[in-house]
Structure formats: structure tokens, C-alpha cells
Image 1 (tube, rainbow, N blue to C red):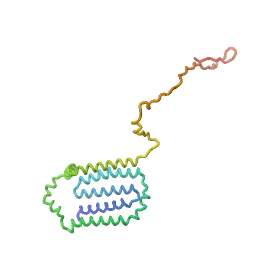
Image 2: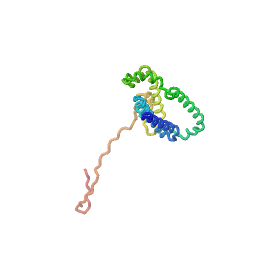
Image 3: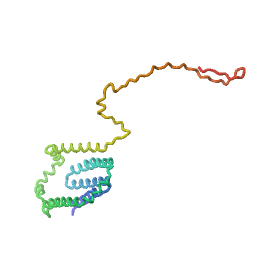
Image 4: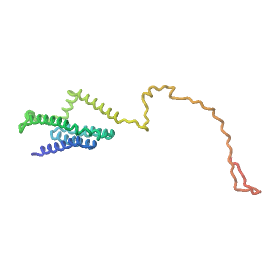
Length: 232
């Protein structure tokens, strides 16, 4: 077994373990972190398949953006996980049956294409043109396919993601007592005469005369009494 095959088995085993922990972890934050680990292992497998662009896109888009959004949503919603897990074991047999059917279908497809040591037909078609394929950029080919043949599915996916972002913001929006929120509909319906209120007040009274305070001097007069002086 060469190094590439060993790395493939290593990445695959770690990805299966991380995927299993995603659905069995009790803490949703831990489940999201295990999903990040699964994405990294999948990116490693893409690198082994010489699809560097897909590996980098998987790390940047899913790990760097989507999973961060998942973590923020999980922490902001404060979901009660105990109430959700009440019916898990009751529905586990049905889920196990569906999982087994999917695993058998995938095994049948993979074993049919890679039976024993038989080289797949696609590999036989690619090997004679290996020199020409080495000069082709898979990033450029993916870009051309996305923005020509798959332009409408790409736009639909972008709209769906936008709706998901708006829904996440709407779910986490809570009314706070200290927020200075103003209803836009009330601002639109306001009239000019409602912006200012004229209040009738009494005429301003005249100011009272200023009386100078009295200051007692420490110097007594001829009869020995204290002298009171008015301070201007």
C-alpha cells in the first residue's frame, strides 16, 4: 500500500467518525465542530483526487462561512436539545433501515464501477490523453460550466441562500426594552402638524430686584457693636 492509499483510508476513517459524532453528540456546538472536522477530511480527499479548487472551496465556503453561521444560529437560538431528542430512539429503527438502504445502493454503484482490479472505463479513456489534460485548469473549466450551462441553477441556489439568511435573522430578532425601535409605517403616516405642538404659557414675570447681602464686619464701632455692611 502506497502513501496515497494510506492517506485516503486515514481521511475516510476520520470523516466517517466525524460524521457519526455529528448525529450522536448531545451538545449542538460539539456536533457543529465535528461537522467542521468532516469537511476538512473531505477536502483532503479532494486534494488526493487532484481537485484542488473543490478542496479550497470546501474549506473556505463551508468551513469558513456556512459553519460559522451555523454556530452563531445554534448559540443565538438557544434550542432545547433535550426536548428534540425525546423521540430519537423511538424512530431509530426506521432511520437505520433508510441508512442501510442508502449504504447498499452506494456500495452497489461503487463495486459495479471498481470491481476487483479492473480498471474503470473512464480511466482507460483518460490515460491516452494525460499530457493534454495536465495543461487544463480545472478551476477555469468549473467556472465556464457554472456561468454557462449551470447559470440558472446557480442563481436559484443564491436566492435560496439569501432567503435562508433572512429567515435566520428573523428567527433571532427579539424585542428589547432598551432598543430605540421606531415603526417605519408610523413614520410614513406622520403629518407635518403632528411633528410640533404649540403650548400656551403665561407671560414671563418681571425679575425681582437684587438685594445685596449683609456682611458683618469684625471691626467694632465706638460703642463696641459690630458693624453691618451691605455688599454691593
